[in-house]
Length: 381
Image (cartoon, rainbow, N blue to C red; front, side, top):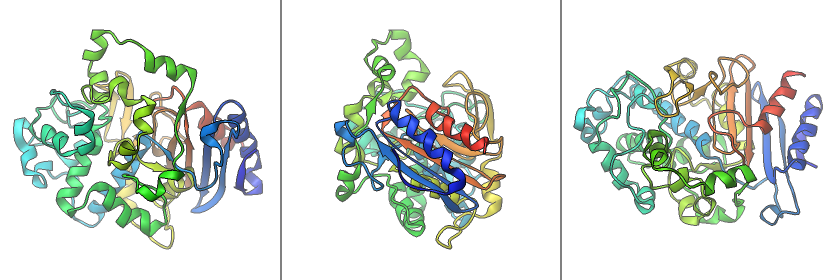
């Protein structure tokens, strides 16, 4: 049975949520805001499972690529303050980036996955990824994998590195620090990119379904490891198996590092509030001009993704409805994370929706079956 609060009108959502947990979701949270008001804020766990004993409202989990929304909103916050310009070249803020034919790459291209830098050609160790500066230097020296602006392809890990360095060059702060100071703290969010030590005990260990276990233990062929998809998902081998091996993502050093594309840590309450803040003031604060948010969910790139090979549609840092990804309406903007966590907002319904789980299933770049059931029930109300 779930715990928390549900507005009586949305009571049936609690029943659907409870079915998810009974079906094997070992720990999860779900939150819904309508017109800026929180109408659902619930959580539950399979208490027999060791990793979820004591699971409560203050538990957090890694949300993987759902983190990209927070990174994008940091950039949009700086655009709104006129400290960044969407159509300025990245080299304006990061001069070394102009090397190897990248002088015309704009911030807009980076946000919409058109920069042509989904990975690097040289080898990268896990230590270098966590340390960050080596990867920043490698991307500055790298030549694009396609003509920037001509195609788009999902920058699974490098999205965060590129955005993070741009934010650092302009503000002097890491992206995690900027997010905490300028967005999370003002909005009252327990949401971290780079986990403080004192919060560690509130972060639940991830677990996996049998389908994901098969994926992680699969012996990859040489053609698979040479594909742009695998090289992108693993940052050319830094994260073997696409980075989804659980000892890696449950490791304290990984949680403490800043990986702005993949290791945000929060729960549904705060992910939903983040999205709600893009539609109406939260805590009496408006951080993004309405016109800028409208541009953020306007299509910037779409079609066959050069990395994934299927149809994707991107706004300014957000994965939009289209192809295998669908939210509430074509104007919804959000981002899923590997394994099932997701957040999105819909400006037409004035709704913010978030689901965070510690039980990873096979979902990737689309809405997982568990939040999809909740959305289906919501649409029927």
